[in-house]
Length: 170
Image: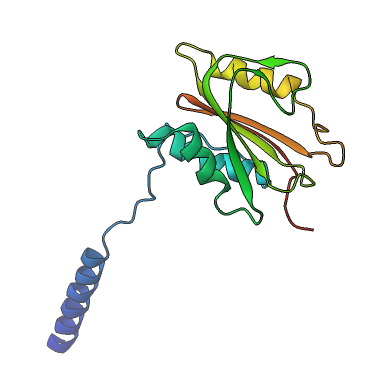
């Protein structure tokens, strides 16, 4: 009986030690300040690259944000500054309301991929700006190809806009 009690006490001590060492594993808390674009498309993937950089990187510029988004694409890209006015992909509609912007896209124009990063003017309504971009964009801005999706999101004082295929595979 003594051996059984000793064995039970030893088992309980061992179980307690294992439980104490394990600690609790709480799931990581997601930063509520960084929005997420849902979906399994190229536009959603690139928007989700853009958003954390735009919201958390205080040294970010429109150029660094665009270069960060296109860094791992399987084609050579170009990033060029733009000014308010007539922009590629919006026909004869002038796009204004931003203080600085860049356009990015492939060096080969047969890929239906065209994007912008805009820094909003002080006090500008980023949501309304995104809606304007979506309303006036032309998925067939390039005669030879047509984009399949449009993505427009605001992160901090920046807006990311993209017309592209849903995937680069196939």
